[in-house]
Image (cartoon, rainbow, N blue to C red):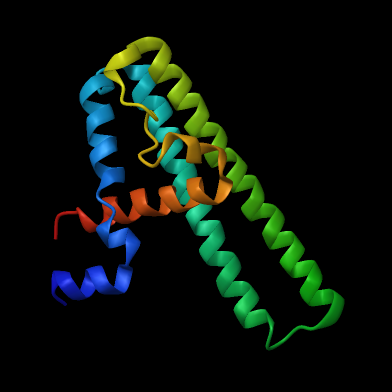
Length: 146
């Protein structure tokens, strides 16, 4: 599959090199700081966990609609949604923790928004943080050695 088709299929994710560029920019400033790299690792792990929860929830709900109904379906959806929300909260917390550390330790060397590559005002929007995490994970996947 050629790159143009991938970009068309993946839409915003394929066109969104900013997340990876920001990761590289932040790493160039703080990559030798053990605390910063540890916090960054936790952030990336929480992004993976959130993404896994979202995909798992979507898969399970889609399939459950064929076998469950009524209260059983509602209970499943509520349980999955709670797990997803907790993973999302952890992701949001880890973005805030890393950014707070980066700004405190590295000040103006860190770009506005810290690790978050979208509009800095959008960091207050849960959905935008989730989308950003997906973009970052996709960028990591897309940039891998093949």
